[in-house]
Length: 253
Image 1 (cartoon, rainbow, N blue to C red):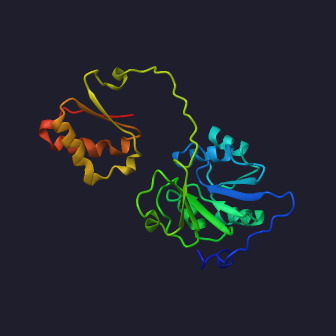
Image 2 (image 1 turned 90 degrees about the horizontal axis):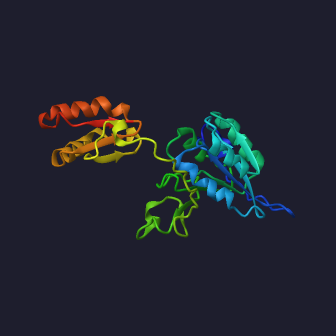
Image 3 (image 1 turned 120 degrees about the vertical axis):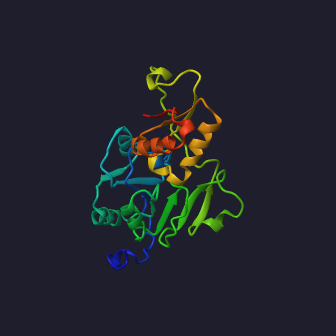
C-alpha cells in the first residue's frame, strides 16, 4: 500500500478543534447493512454523545437495506462509495477526521488494504472480528473486559482498550411468530436436531467426521444447515461411505 499510495501512509497531525467544533469520528466498512460484524455498531452510533462527536460513515459496499438506513439516520455525514478505494480514501482525508474506526476487519480485502494506510491521526478496530489486524497503521483495538483472558495485550499488535461489559449495545432482534413446524423440513418430533448455523465455508472438510461420529452415537440425530447447499454433496458422500449411516438425513435450508 505504501508503494501504491506513498502520500497516504505518512503520519497525520491531530486537527485542532475550533470553537463549537465537535470531535470528528468516522466509521468505514463494506458492511454497513444487515451483517453480524457491523450490526452492533448501530448501538454505538445511536447512543453516541452527539454534542461532542460528529459522526461520519463511509459505506464501501453496495447492498443497502433497512440497517443501512439506520446508519444514515445516526450519522451526521453518510457516504456511499462502493468498490472505489481511492475515492473513499480521498473523502476520508478531506473530512479531516480525528479518529477513524474500521468496525470489522477480515472479510473484505479492500478494507484491509485501506486500513494499511494512514487516513486519520488515530485509527482503531473493534471486535467485529475479534482478532488483531497485525497492521502497524492501526493504533487501538477496542475489545471487551468480559472477552479477554490473562495478559490480553500479548495477543494484539494494537494497544488494547477494554470497554465495560461486552462493550456494545446490541439491538434487540425481532422474533417473528412461528408459522412452520418440524414436518415442513421433513423432521419428526423424535429427532434430535443439531442446528449448524455458521456460514457454510466455515465447516472445514477435515472435521466432517465429527458429524458422522455424532450420528453414529445418536441414531435419531438430524443436522440442519442454513445456506448449506455448498456442503450438500460433500456431506452426503461422507455419509454414503459409512454404510451403517446411509439412512441419516441432513437437512439444508
